Length: 420
Image 1: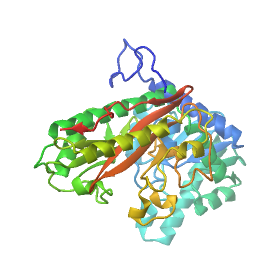
Image 2 (image 1 turned 120 degrees about the horizontal axis):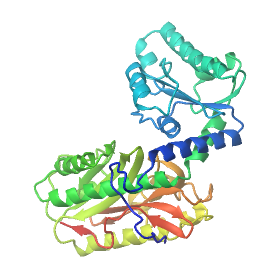
Image 3 (image 1 turned 180 degrees about the vertical axis):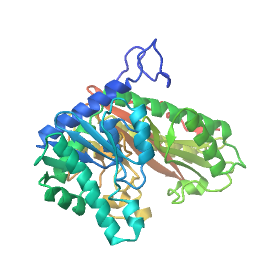
Image 4 (image 1 turned 60 degrees about the vertical axis):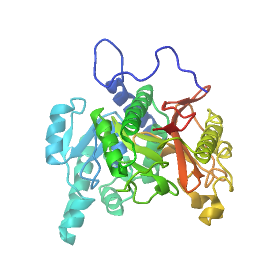
């Protein structure tokens, strides 16, 4: 396991002049440079990016999701960036984002706007105009007849750019951005460490609030308030209790009243800090845990660290996946399943970054036949679960692949189930 150096750990969330914290300017620069390096490696002169995490990776803009294609970004081989956005967003970005010097008004040729228009001719106008905005910018910057990557495979977009004389390669663009984003910079890692610390504030709020008579929604609402208080963007997560903990309740948090003897688990997934997403489970016992609950927790933690202890650079994902529970440990008989791919989300590790699921994915469902190699600087969440009578335990850690093994970013106590 990775041992942190002196004073290494979460610093404050505010900007100060007396201590080096997350350097967002350095992070923006290093991310753009990685994208440029991979763009060159994949034979592209430029990339047009529509996917929100890719846009944020290159520009630093906090994209909020939604329709898609009402904002898009052009990255050129010489490092220039052109960004298009909706009217109010673009005008604000011109004032607030001085590192971007070419921000233009977007034409939403894809997504909700053309879909809502109810008119084929309007849709044709919008996509043609969008294509023209990109093609005109490419030509302005001297990239006529360039090889251009797109991170979405929309046929109308591709045909439009091809018709303007550009060679379009979607596969190369997707591969370039995947390669750029799979290994994190030091500032990206600190963003993930920070979001883990914010989640721990949420766990403490749960511990302080949880008691018989509260509802799942009530306790989860208190946790979400705490997360927002610390500057997080809460775009996912839930809390379940009692019989809703095994199997996972499809409706997420409910108005179920929590009772003595319940297990309660909280899943802080898609909690963002500067765009970097968490995935972090912990389980609580309402009152003194039973022997079965303690045993389920112990086995879940053992399963978790059987996997984490295998993680280091150069190891392949099939080797790590062997640490996850086998057919019996997955309780496949209970589910009526006979193949590991049917057990999606129960026991796996998935990459974390500007998206909840990034490279790598470690899972018995695919890793045995389709392994990839782990690299230093990859970040991921590792999650496991075990049943306890008619309830269940889930635990999860956020980790970084370091030269000497895994560094665990998450720090909420895990040796014993948290009793409240």
